[in-house]
Amino acid sequence: MSLRVDGVSVAYGPVTAVSEVDLAIGDGEVVALLGPSGCGKSTLLRAVAGLEPPAAGTVSWDGVDLAGTPVHRRGFGLVFQDGQLFPHRDVAGNVAFGLRMRRVEREAREKRVAALLDLVGLSGYADRRVTELSGGEQQRVALARALAPRPKLLLLDEPLSALDRALREQLAVDLARLLRETGATALVVTHDHDEAFTLADRVAVMRAGRVVQVGEPSSVWRRPADVETARFLGCGKVLPPEAAERLVGVAARVGLRATALRVDPAGPIGAEVLERVHRRDHVRLLVRLEGEDFEAVAPVAAPPSPGDRVTLSVDLDGVAVIG
Image (tube, rainbow, N blue to C red; front, side, top):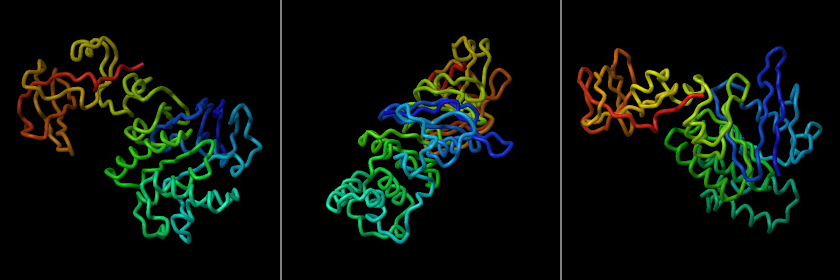
């Protein structure tokens, strides 16, 4: 079973939100639509769901055009940013909703609900009111509810963005495990690089309504398609081939993330520290070398101060080859 999006465009009056997008998702595959706010990724997801009519192109499932199929008959599960749970139902009632709509027998329904609550780490929560749950717990219930009817495709629109950073990171790991354990086929919309690379088998980068690159997370991360994609993926500095070969030993146009240059007492590159900012697990530096400013990182213990001279080494994991 597979989803195909062929030449899909979505317009709101004179404004084109999605332009001629092609995308395919195979059985059991998780694809992340990654891009900045306003790039059209949520609109594309809504077109797949049937919530927005395409102005052009087709959305098909197993070769069948879904143009005449309403949302509730597509067999897709939907999870939105705020979960959209039913406040008048308890946790079990929320998870069981899709099963009730399909007239699943009570015993089978209760077994399915119990199994899913265990899977999302909420065993013992069946009788809780959803209004008493934390934001992370509510999103787990929303995921269980979407998975309960065994949807052909799971559509997740920024499912973790309303949570704080630490909780989002933990839930992303849990969600990745959940998707793989259930064998779900899924399309995930996110603006967060870490989230996309944690969840997805493949990443589709969107910009200004178009998909500009599709590939495995490591490939997209190491070889962004163009300069704008490289900058979106955290490359604060772009070097032409000559400068790149001289500084990092790569004879190509490259993007440097902050982690490309690291403070190293034995490093071959001399620089002056201009600024220092403490982060959770490292110190971010702004340094000057060869008359230009670069980002670099230092360990939290005894980091250098502005005005200090330091030596740096190159960590190729922070270097991206562009194009």
